[in-house]
Amino acid sequence: MPEGRLDDEQLDRIFAALSDRTRRRILLRLRSGPATVTELTALAGLSQPAVSKHCKVLEDAGLVRAERDAQRIHRIIELAPLIRAAVFVSQFEVQVDARLDRLEAHLQSGTDEETP
Amino acid sequence: MPEGRLDDEQLDRIFAALSDRTRRRILLRLRSGPATVTELTALAGLSQPAVSKHCKVLEDAGLVRAERDAQRIHRIIELAPLIRAAVFVSQFEVQVDARLDRLEAHLQSGTDEETP
DNA sequence: CGCGTACATTGCCAACTGGTTATAGAACTG
DNA sequence: CAGTTCTATAACCAGTTGGCAATGTACGCG
Image (cartoon, rainbow over all chains, first blue to last red; front, side, top):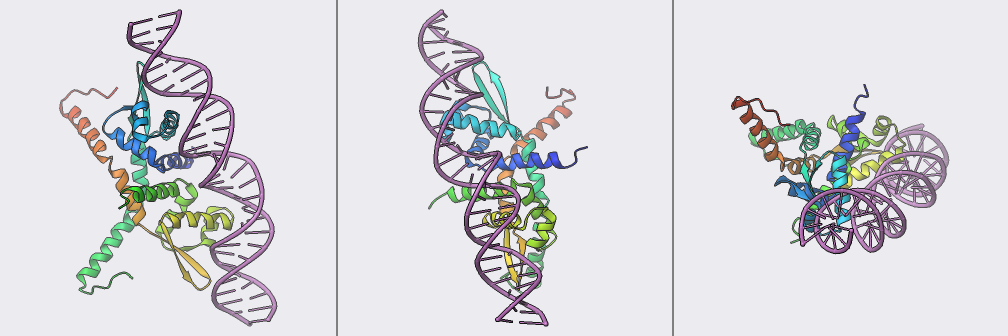
């Protein structure tokens, strides 16, 4: 069993895909339903091949899938990788909670010492 | 006011920083407290300059800060960018919820039609 | 001061990215 | 079949990335 290597490769691609604003805009657009490359091209203000490339990156990360309808090819958002990303980030939530707890403790102790 | 451009640049750097497994490992290590580059080098199995570079990327993304203690420089995890990342991803939670709602509806309608 | 330790910086390299234009293919339309 | 539309692919280019070895710098200690 190849252990966590695949996990890492997936997260590599997911976060790399999310690290570009054009691709993030595409994903946000796809929240409200499927879209064609032509539509996304208008939205992105880039050349059509550039947008096709971005879609390929998103597909390779599993964030998007393609569905053919005659000449049109619709891109559809895929949520699983986003959940994987959220799960990774949530590994740090304990820290967030701890920080909030400490804040709360400060407030309840009456002393208003700010973290300098 | 430059609007959402800064937001985008920050998210660019945050997600780019998260897109490397070595940097993710470093962050996970830093959950349990500050660490020096020497410690992180042992953990990463890379050269010391490589780890220094990774730390710089993490710092530029705001995910880590440096605190000097004599010769040692401790890296400390910074949660704000992780929260920003989580906020971005959570923009898609509506979809997740909607999917769960649909699943629930399927289950309650008695018909066990799976999404084909 | 001189030495060792901890870390950053530099220079170099191959590989990858993000963009372009030009071209090719697939599917409807007349 | 010829033309149009939608999309993918190819070829190319500049800039970035991630790794290394070598060197430089800052600090503590004898």
